[in-house]
Length: 344
Image (tube, rainbow, N blue to C red; front, side):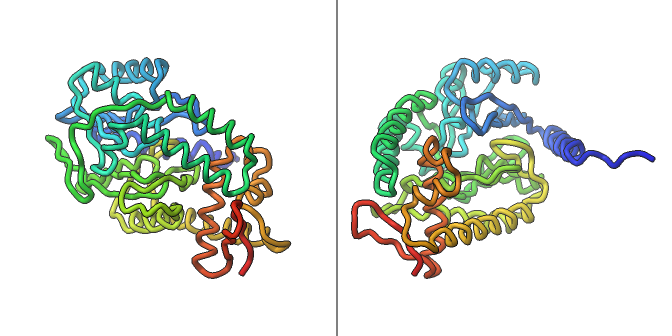
């Protein structure tokens, strides 16, 4: 009697089949190494006219060499790229954009709201890091920890770089190549600039980090790109709205910025939304003994990770606190400098 197929092997073959289908449609995944815990970032070569790259990888010699090697394996050089589309502002997706444009004749395109961020990267990212420091301090992270993480952020900024933007893409507009067209869909939440490129004819979407297989995208707290009144944005609330919009999308395949392809986005989004609700319930339970800061809640949930990754875990907790405060289950006490949450 033969043994049942290994689940991991079946999943790997399904991923390979989806990537073959994408390649037949002229879209090739290129994994690029990053120094971050998420691992490789996926950039995509769209073999069309103009020859198009979606996302770039981080600003490092290692990433650039791997991109050149992968392009050569597909019969192209870096100088052949004529269009680079950036899906969102995070440095593993934007860092090499300037180098790619400098090496050839590539135009850089992105969501119109994102363009000022890429063009004034150093000033924007420094302000974003200052915002993160304030959020950490207001939500209970010790000063020596928050200040150390702020110093690390200065070092990490080098993995990104400013770049010019040649084409600003409006939400809902169509990016037309010779043999295909991508609808530009704005899906903020993971970042304020998340953009999905939807090939309606082929039923394929290039999703950046909006929706990922095997890992839930963190709804990172960051200042919105429009209409910001200075209050902390409810990024998880925004992200859930974006997920529901994508759930209604008529698509067979989503190619994400990390991990594997997604062939059943509707059930995956159901899973993600349910996980948000379960996490909110678990955090609500932790408030049974009295008020807690977001950092205390993060430490109770993730232990030492909540120190080394304080801003990411705070973003996670604050997003779920927003769900609970919006439904009236939790109140936010701002009477002191350090903010605490309590059951209502």
